[in-house]
Image (cartoon, rainbow, N blue to C red; front, side, top):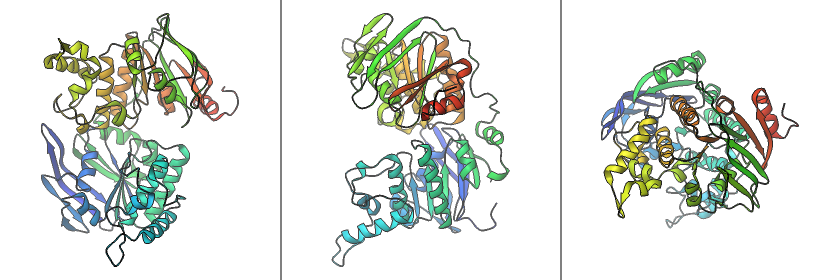
Length: 501
């Protein structure tokens, strides 16, 4: 560990919510010019720590030290003033403001008359963007930028308040391979500027690539810390879950039946063309492709979110016309979206209302909802997924990402579908929750459900799929089965490097 004193330290910090001890006597040290990885399963307390450090939550016990002096962050403004800034997986910026306005919002340079100095704001924003190698016009509206560029704006904002501590919470979750490499370079730049960086990620390759130190939390408690150069993946996994995870993908008893679902000639004017495939009872069909390949767009059309320009769907021998999501649900097709926060869950509503929402005909009588039936339905499916929550009337927005995903899956399983589409089902969730989702997917297939799994993770695609369809630029590039399902074949097909072998 470094011989220098930490820039920021937490000691014996505790935070509770009704029925849940989110943090209990945890500790954390962040050092100038270094990256510390915060590692733990969903529900370990990582998100709570971020909210404590940024002044959103107030701890009930323990202390925060900045340069050895005890401090308090009663608000997000106080945390920012102390030099603590967070860059979240979903950047908290404003679409209708310019890049310069987002960077300087709340602390813009002023004229001698006390008005915002627009010229200075633009000039200083351009200088900040240039300092991190971001080729972004400061006058452009934020809504015109992609996810990677939004992250760059968020980093420029952190530098605008002269942040000494930069928190990066799952910053690569929605980035392409090239954008991830650019983010790594940017982290090195921040290190060279002496920033203390807290890096939160579920991807072990990222952690080992970018972090200097690690701290592990489990169930809201501090488990251990050390140098990444002295750690192994096996050791960290054991610390995270309290047990060894020897086999990520469950052994499956494959009992694949007849074809139950076919898609023929599905096309969209701008997103995809001539999509054709079949799906059998009890089968897990993987969809793989690079960012922009059109996988999610196909799935959203099959669920009635968007309308295809051509093509047909056949389920159980009958042609199905899918114009709306209600048509899809009625036919027995359900979709668990990639963006569970915006498309899968309604934050502000409790777990039981989220889980029972598509099944109101089952939980009501005479036009009136039956609360007991809503709870019973929710309990049946969330228990099968081992949901971890204080109670079923807890706000879904207070759950960890992995537990939110479980509620979204439970919601659709309660409709008793024939086909379930899982779009990036383990994105942003920890290794323990991933294993649980994989095991549950295997059980669904074993019970005869036809499963489509869209994933960007090659080990997941190969470990869970019976067949894999690879998409590239809106078209099917290859269909791989058996021994042909190799990492090399997936990458070659996705990148258009000739025939997959």
